[in-house]
Length: 335
Image (tube, rainbow, N blue to C red; front, top):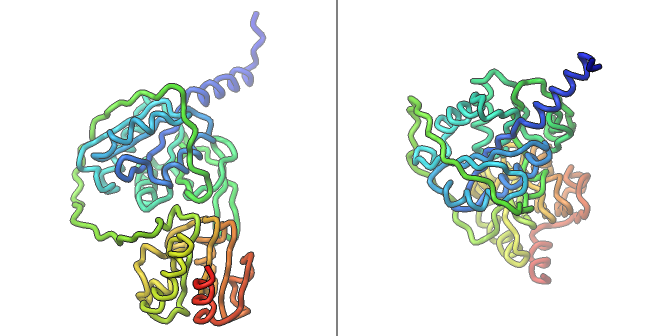
């Protein structure tokens, strides 16, 4: 007679379900390569310790699929190349994601997406349809159902555990290193059917800021300016030469963006980009809590401000009190 208890049978079943279930990772592409945020999301997906099914959409999906299939941990790559997914309209992507999560044959118990503009639109829509509480902007994976995420503009950390059948999360890109480990045998690639919708949202056009400087989201060095730079001409004349010498990206506080000093794609902060470069130089930025939430994970923070009581100095590794209009040109010249 076999001596299994009810508890041991339940535990064995739970382990079997966990072992065999998959993580669906929605990955964004730029051309034929994954975005930096998607590479970080892939690292987070691996830490869940389940086989990963990657989902790529849009006309570039097929070109990117072969390189994605080589990453360690990916068991299958699903692609959908219809032009309707080209611009990542959430009204089009959400029905596709939901259909996969509802497909019992896919056996998906976790869903991961970068906490990008796309992720912030797709995750809540998909979760609402499925009646699931999503966990947004996670910065650490504790176990397959437990995660750490920031709250109160990053001033507190929550450890949260989900009991939902499907655990849906978005990943803060700056919190995880980009995936780079390759597998000896590439995963199979499968084209799936598009999902028809009655979507009335239509892509019209986009205006992208062109720059010869590194991308702000993934740059190793960032030079940021605040309201103290007075106007666009001053912002450009002080920050651009310094950024060029350092090979740095340009960033800005919300106040600088709102006053028209630069494009809003350069905003760093809670309502802008959240970054963690090796070096962050804050010039004329006082350090509002919303701005600090976007850059305080930088490895080295340098603050230059004439106000010695500015909050930015509380988190800076190097602080210089003085006139930015004399300090920055001298620093640029010496570099």
